[in-house]
Length: 392
Image (cartoon, rainbow, N blue to C red):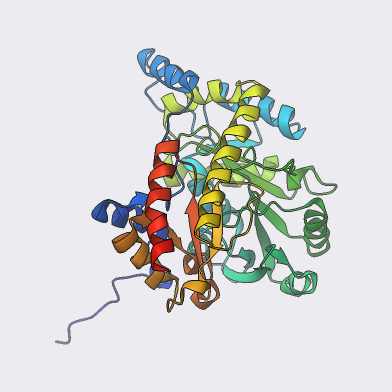
């Protein structure tokens, strides 16, 4: 009798690799390198959030919250969104709380995308977007952001839209480049979304980390876009709690209904006491965000000064907390080879640029530095990177 041999790994899982970003943290620990790879702060979160988390646990907010989010937290999100973005969001019908913005994007994709649909993704892109589209059965359609300013070609973007296009992903402020999409760029995107009846998924997790008087513009606030935009955000970056895994989604009631069903069966719910603590985050005064911007402006200047010292070209980030740098002058075969050299011989972990592109060759001359680190970490990084200058 012939024994049946079945493929054990799904076709979907075979189409992408493990996270390169998270892998770089593991390698950094292995070699004792300064970790400027993964995007997490190594300094404390606001005291108010810690106290609120203690109190939530102490008062036994330790069982399931409502699947789509703690009531007090959703109400606080709605108030904060109204204050910051000017959007009038109903916390009962338009907000879904998720296990971080990572789960949020996956839930949104699974709730809205069918096999055969196309999703437009700007590249370079945060590495989760491509796999999310594949898991949802979609075909990613990549539109290049061109250096040195990481702008898209209008003709290329227009050509990407077609009868199969279901959605477009916009990440602003942008990871990995630090680009902030302009009103002009977003207006064109809005025009095309309405022309082709396309949804917009916006990842706005870095909305408060901005430089040089740059303004964050939420796509949902543009004419005709509130009903077709699904806005993704979370506590991780703005409040320095990447390990809490509390994100949220804003969408119209019909889309929210579908997203909540998917979210329920993906994770049931985000951690209840941390959702309740999120109320304190949403209630922080405007001065908190002003001080946050100053804090990150100083960190940005520190890393840029270091890169100037060793003469590595870079794009000056207008938002988020990354610098995308050009390493072609060093003469290495590709970004992977150079990144390995940095970790093993220089003592610095960064993310190879190829991990942010569908075609790795497009990113072989780039690396990403994360500067959401305390002064001692950045100083240690500076000391190690000076070795690179000596060997250049």
